[in-house]
Image (cartoon, rainbow, N blue to C red; front, side, top):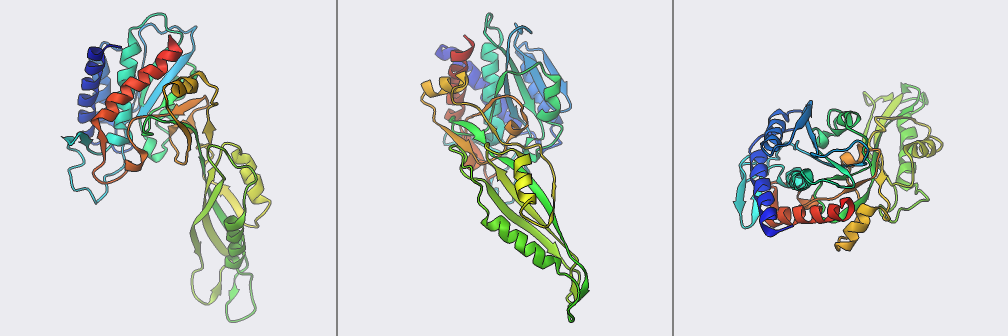
Length: 357
């Protein structure tokens, strides 16, 4: 790829990111950024498709007989926190940084992937088709984002999920299992030897969550982690509580299924255990995968990510990778370095070149 071509892709990407930052796009309110992305792609001669606030497109010479790669990132944002000193919706470029809400998470990734898609868009005789998808509701793990879009796309062989990773490769990602637990007792008067205190039962169960260690430790994601984060019981001081509710945040490595985890928990505690959702499962892509081997050839390192993304909703191998730094996500005066986006486009293109040509 020549310098002039990269520079055009880079300039267009920065201008698109500035428009996205300047347009509020809180989760479930992404209509305007969806339109901006759609108009941008159509201005480049790309035929686009829309479902709800999700925009997607296929490469020009899409062949249904070839396998397909998905390039995906999100265009929704969290709410700006109160510590901002800059206008979160004003894209300011200063000291080599582009400031603004969503610039790092995940606007920089999205525009870099769009630029990458455009680079390959008109190329003939690729080994793979390429689809770009700019999706909604990632920040709230909503059901009207990539999850609802995937059944409407052609079959995907593997994908790249754009999230800020300093352009290193997140091969695996911990799943999230949120459990609502209820310990049951018998009500009675606190002054007499009456009742069966549900709170005491819950304490024993909570102690088990504190102390239990799972046998399988992942090389990429480390051990499983369980944290009791909410507890609620009782109505007045002189009544033995008949019910105690508590919530557990469980981060699951790729060596356990959610079903295995639930079986272990239920066999060790007396409280009822009700999972809120089993959608956000742990994921991993083999290091032997051609995409990962391409990244290694480019000097990229790999790791397991403790955070959850739309990768968890995909039932095919995915690599989480993108410009920017996860440590900046959801922070006040969020920013991404301009050079991170330029280097991100270059690396994405090299990464795929080794696979599709």
